[in-house]
Length: 155
Image 1 (cartoon, one colour):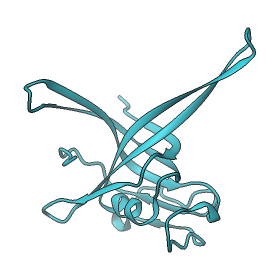
Image 2 (tube, rainbow, N blue to C red):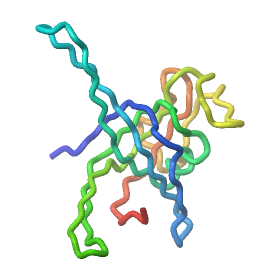
Image 3 (tube, rainbow, N blue to C red):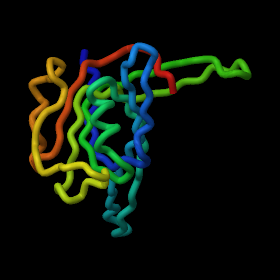
């Protein structure tokens, strides 16, 4: 069985980053993907934007914290996870999110809105946690990988 998601989209807000009690970093991103649909009969193009919740752990969370800002274009690869909980009113709630195991920053080097970030270099982040897919993106920007986690999120 395969549970794989690949997204290329724009970050809707600065990452929400937290450190858990053990010092493990976790970040949450909201990513928008837009699909353009052309209707041949009416000759009109419509856009449909879908918002995705993405969770990044450890090294990926650190890269997101340091380099990703609202408007950044990113490539995300990961898997779908659905969590459930009971809210304070006793209602059962659900959330579906993407747990990322690969992150690449896209766009031109001069497009990075992160202040002080020097994106003039390529390279991989992640140390021993790197996957074979964590090579620099075609534009030479930052790439990172981290193992998947199944822990509950503190968000």
